[in-house]
Length: 135
Image 1: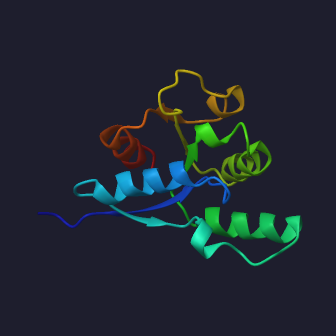
Image 2: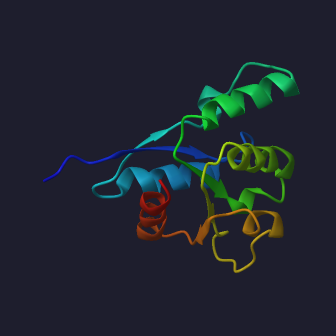
């Protein structure tokens, strides 16, 4: 078997609402023949208290080395300020954006659908295939 490629990804997140984040990580962890490095910082590794400027610098540092930015669109409504910043940062760094449709919904926030390179549902194969295409 050929050597598997290690995909560098950043997953949008909101530390006070992380169920969808961990669900996505679990899907990716269980995906067969898929190796990835997650450059986002989950709740249990959250940054120490910092200013907004420091946080934007940290997010930019996380996004800079990745190949694909995954946006969990179900989080956007409640955490739009930071997720919008993550999307804007990815766009300015020319990183492809993969939007993941809210679970059980056909609605996608317009701000996400306008900037995403691709939109997929909550399906392991769809997400992994899109990461491979975009990376």
